Image 1 (cartoon, rainbow, N blue to C red):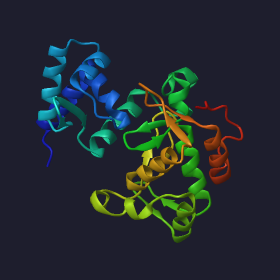
Image 2: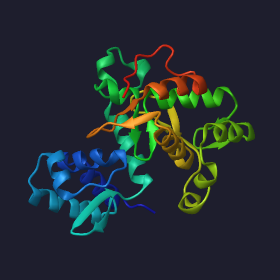
Image 3: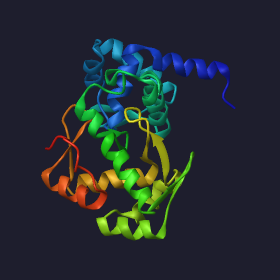
Image 4: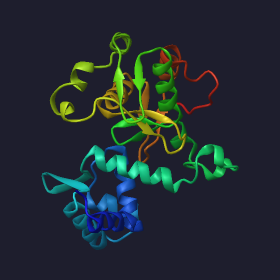
Length: 242
């Protein structure tokens, strides 16, 4: 059982601006060095080192060595979910309670359109894909979980999604499909092993490309066509292209 003290300690760690900046940068799933994280947080390497030690000790970050370098990443999808939840709360009240669009979600249009949420896709594109999958009976989503239907398995395999990999190995120890509240759209997109497989397919097929130094991803010309055909996405959107 989580104690109040442990809850307060975790909240205090995330609440520091420098540490929050480091954690936010790692939300795209990358592993970065202490120097890279120091620059992202706007602090000295010495200060960053202290922050990283605290985050690692608390189990929020994991460290991997490669040669002379140490790379830091979010320790688990659970940490990413926590951060995404905090972002949703910090962004303000739900969309129907907000009068000014400027108060909702990220100001960066690219982040609003399509971005990585740790290991899965978020933003308008991810919500549109989720809506399309639910509408065609491919996915059934509840408040706390979801399931892929037999028709959905056939549909996603036809798109090249490796469902076997998503259901095997380390993926077997995580939730296969669950809704994740999109903090800019305030509606669910698909997370879990299935969400990670969908993002991997979009990147592998060059439908989406990562943008250097950003969580945003750009839709390629070929991706725009493929996503329109598969999910009806892009007919009325002015999303950026790679």
